[in-house]
Amino acid sequence: AQSVTQPDIHITVSEGASLELRCNYSYGATPYLFWYVQSPGQGLQLLLKYFSGDTLVQGIKGFEAEFKRSQSSFNLRKPSVHWSDAAEYFCAVSGAGGFKTIFGAGTRLFVKA
Amino acid sequence: DTEVTQTPKHLVMGMTNKKSLKCEQHMGHRAMYWYKQKAKKPPELMFVYSYEKLSINESVPSRFSPECPNSSLLNLHLHALQPEDSALYLCASSQGIRQVTYNEQFFGPGTRLTVL
Image 1 (cartoon, one colour):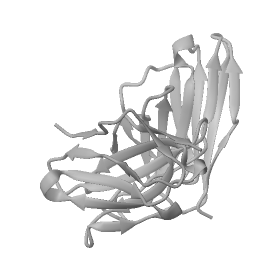
Image 2 (cartoon, one colour):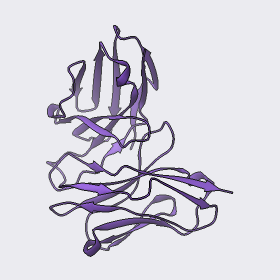
Image 3 (cartoon, chains in turn blue, purple):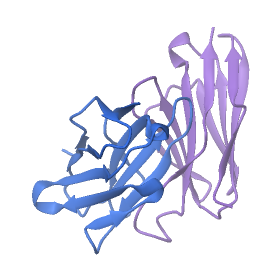
Image 4 (spheres, one colour):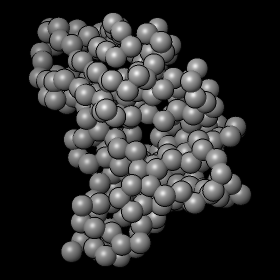
């Protein structure tokens, strides 16, 4: 079955501390992987994507993610979190030639001063 | 222009009303999507249009009626909705599978719908 698991429903991080959000996927074909961020009441903004090539991908706002095929993971990282990073983060996967994107349940990030 | 716009931002309607949500993109994308998102949940796919033809309907009730008048516009017509239909409705677009094999979607800001 195709699925995306984000094990952490919510995470609290101090401002300036590092961040890692976990994502595991199950997909029968070559996966195309995405991280989106959503502020309250807003649409989803694409942070970064992985299609092929270098397994460490850089995104916007200082985020990066590493694709590990052996672990079926695509974890999102940021070295130093800012208060404005507080939001909901969704990991997602899709495949070649299809319209459907499978989203994880999301991880809510809280940032404390 | 890498923007997907949606109007209105907020909509309150009664169960007997008829209203429409509008979505527009000028990125030359040929696939457009409607999603429904309840609070604290991921988006749920409702409809996909590819090259102005309905490609996917995820068993959505007929009180939701999509329309794609041209490649830049996507509408969602609403009639006789129920209070449980209250949600954030998101529109998205992507290049289209004839052009690329991956499905990078660009999302609009959404319409917050409340059904009384």
